[in-house]
Image 1 (cartoon, rainbow, N blue to C red):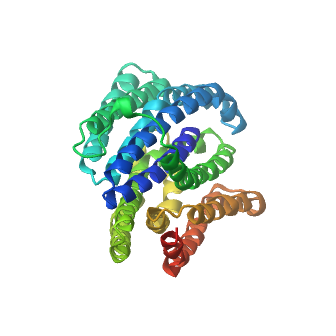
Image 2: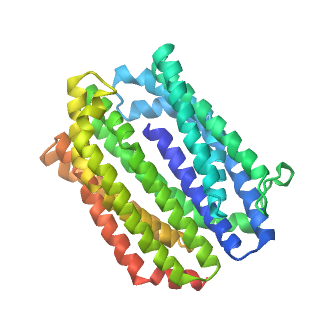
Length: 391
């Protein structure tokens, strides 16, 4: 759901900023500040989770109404979203803990926990939806329980970590200096992540205007291409962590090589997944719905968007490499222009000339291409690295 993605996207961005600072301390072998950064970040996640949980539960229904959600889907959407927001504290602790563990080189633990969580979620989906017939509420409960389970395992892993990044509940608190660095780095990242979701809210409103079948197909296409975004995000997080550690160690050449390696991996993996979705979009959609109209719309959506996923991976890699050096304002500005401003122009100035679903879908490849071009030019200019080293 777009609203939950908006909150999570913002918090994941802030978490990535916290992880950048933590990764730099790790690269500098500064154990004292490393420990304080971990406890500051987890405290921020705890407080933020409480705030977002309360706001989300209270305001989700009027927000969905403002988004022109079809009336027949409103009750289910509210039920699902409130379950998700009820688990927001756990969601933020999970995202923050995962980011911090990756920042210190522990990638295997979070990967195993997230993978096991996917299996747990699949089983719970079957129980609550297929067996108990709880529909959207069942999906929401399954997601909430999975998030809480994953968050618990992440926190336990952090409490048993071997190094200075071990989490101790008695040390939870905010270090003002480190908190300031995290916020200055993390807030632009949070706004950058939220910018994607804000633009998606705009697109969702337009999609809803085409009726319930298209709205359902849009949600289904999001489920089918979810693996693409998971892989893209994982590679973006990896290059951010890699860059942060090497920036802390002042190994700039290794940062450059890591960026190009990540770019090649992204093209290979995302290209392969895109091909699968293009070829099998029809059969895959029919695994979830029997309605021929919804299946056809889902196929149309994926055929318009899937060929261009690799372009988006350029944005993630360039942005991640720059963020790793602690430079987050410029990527935020490029993202907001490319994914919000241009899409607003498209929806309100260009769409009226041809108000069709296909014309709306073109906004994704067009804005991805423009944004990727801007990021590539800025990254290769090297200005961001000079700005970071001058701090």
